[in-house]
Length: 520
Image 1 (cartoon, rainbow, N blue to C red):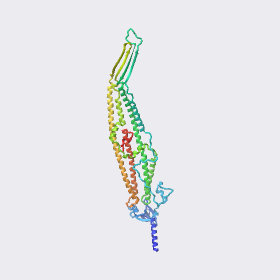
Image 2: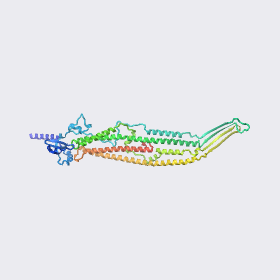
Image 3: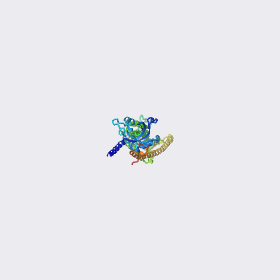
Image 4: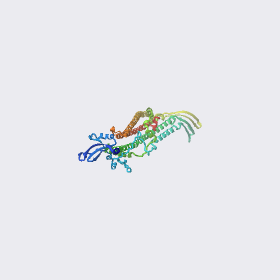
């Protein structure tokens, strides 16, 4: 009976002490009087005085498998190192040392963390392919832009041209009336009349006539269009620059989300490494480096944490989020459209029209039809119908025709060079657009592969597979770091895609970028 009680007591005592013991790696154990007792301990290890001996031990784990990586780590430096069992309390953290190991953001003054309890780490998850997610307080700006002014000016130009087109077509018809009364007549000779009057109805064809008026209308239209496209080209250039500046302002949002993610990821890593540091696996200098990174990322987060509004509408933002999946209209159709409606092309066309409507020889020529009635006192009345033709003898206008040809030739050459530029630009922009789309899709594919790899690493971490002899926490950190870099690159490429679409819309003179996108 006593033997059974003794065995039970011994088993109970063994289990009690087993809970207080852990596996550790002893690097060396020398007498206090030995010179070797002054040797410095490696980072993360404990220098213990046990009786008359000084021991250096690293790590304190529940199982033999968990301590083996630490043994492998120091075996080359300390060939006589071996695994032993030691009391757990020797590796417990003193409360006064907690603040030295953890940054202030992790220390709760109200609830102190038990020294022998590992800090619980809240995992940082990486969501989405980009950093374009808005902050809650951010809104879209629907203010009037230069583009709105351009639309108003186009309407004004159309109204002017419509007014000129609708002007009276009844032009060139005129009536001439003349009445003469004679005084102080000399009746001896009687070679004149007492009075006469003449009424003439005349219709002019060229100068001051119908065709001259039509030519003048065309000239006025050309003047309106030339002045309009001269002004609108500058406004379109300013509108394009403003739009690009608005898109570039997204860099603050992207950088904020990027560094904020890095900040949270480094927080996670610091907590994990702090836990491992107490086991002697992670040296103190690595903890200090992580603290420095956290401080640096926090400053960057604060710098980019601007509560500015997004300077474009929600539709443009939604397009940006999914821009890697859109398709543009056929580029050959876009090229043809640009050759017709590019503002510079339209300006050169209006200049050609202005030259064609410049003053010519026939503009000073007179051709008209008339009917008249002439009455002279007792001499009687005359009714006449006739045609009047007047051709000036000044031939200088023919010399101006040569100048007009030279001017037209210069403009036509410019237009041909402009066509070539539009072809090349649209071709290059389309190629750039497709290549950037492929880069985004490849980065997204790599992101998915890393996500799968991350799941496997988490499985290793959760099951504490120490036999793999790898720092799994560091691998997870580096993998997540790579994923954040991919998200940053995807975000920048999406912005580049939007800029490319805006550039195509600008050179084709399509104010609405949706007009160059294929409908799904």
